[in-house]
Length: 315
Image (cartoon, rainbow, N blue to C red):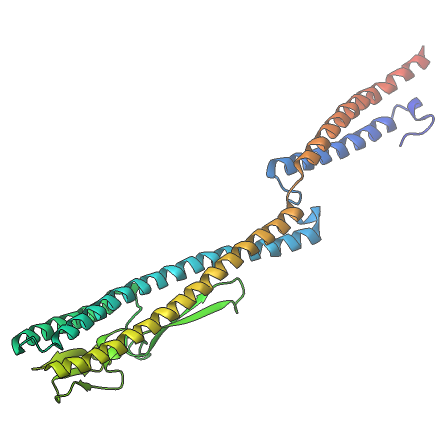
C-alpha cells in the first residue's frame, strides 16, 4: 500500500502497483465466479474445497453404483418374468392333462378313445420339455436345472441358481433358485415311476443329463387314468411351489427397487448441496466483482497518470 510521499517518486509507482494487485485479485475472483456459473458447480477442483471434494466424490461413486444396481434389479425382474411366463405355459399344459385324464377315467370311453387321450397327453409332455428348452436368457437355460461343472451342460435336474447384484456394495446380493421344469422332475423326480393300477400301463421316465424324461401310455384303463389324475395334481402342486418362489423373489426385487430409488435421490441431494453452485448468490457476486473491476481499472489509470504531476516541479 502506498504511503505519504510515494506520489513524489517516479521511478517506482507504488500506487500503480497497489492498483494492479487489487485488479489482479478481482480478475482472479471474477474468473472463478464465471467458472462456477458456467459449470454450475461450487467446487470445480480440489483446491476450491478439498474436504468437500473428497466427500462429494464418494457420494457420486455411490450414486453411480446405486444407479447400476437399479438397472440390475430391472434386468433381474425381466429374467424372472421370462421364467414365470414359461411356468404359466407349463401349468396350462398340466391343467389340460388333468382334464384329459379325467375324461379318460370315465367308463363311457373305450380302449381306442383312451389310447387317443394317452397320445395327446404324451404330446403335452413333449411340449412341456420344449418349453424348458426354449426358456433362455443370455444363453442361460433357466428351466433345465443345474449346470454340470465339468461339461457346462444342463443336467435337467436340481436348481439353476441366479445371484443378482442389487446394491453398490459387494454384499448387496439376492440369490434365487429356479428348479428344473420337465416331465421327469414333475412326474418321476425319484427315478423311473409306474403310474396306475396295471403295471407299466402309464410310466414316467426320470430326467438326467441324457434327457428330460417323458410319459408313456400303454393300454391304460380307467383306473390307471384315475391314478394319473393324482400324479398330475402332485405335478401342479410342484409348479405352484415354483411360482410361489418366483413371486417372493419378485416381491423382494420390487422392494429393493423402491429402496434404491430413494437412496439415489438422497445421495444425489447430499452431493448437490456440497458441489452445486448457488446461482443467485454467484450472480450477485458477479455483479459486485464487475463493478470492482471497473473501479480498479479506473484507479489504475489514475495511478499511472500520477507521476505526471511531478513534472510540475520542473517548471
